[in-house]
Length: 97
Image (cartoon, rainbow, N blue to C red; front, top):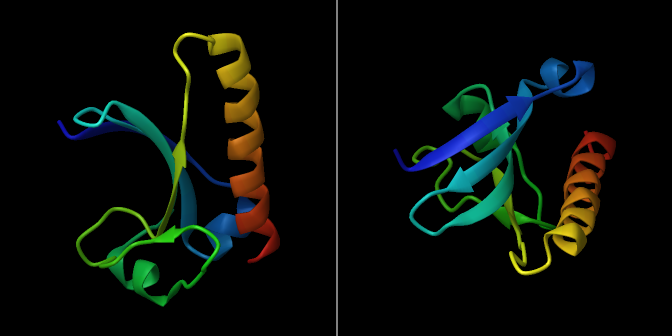
């Protein structure tokens, strides 16, 4: 298994055939948040430059990604930053749709 994830969406994202995915990448031991399409065709039409754009959405499971950096020595502070980063990403995506 390369990664573990859970996904969610809302009415606006569903209408545009998009979803938000919270991912843990095992090999790199890191968390990311992704914008993903419901299929490869949707992933190829979405463009955004604020976040990491997939080089080849036909071969990846995301359109956009953002690393979520955690300091495992200070989990309380990390969770505060994590919440802020996730909220900012989701808000940016939803408001740009």
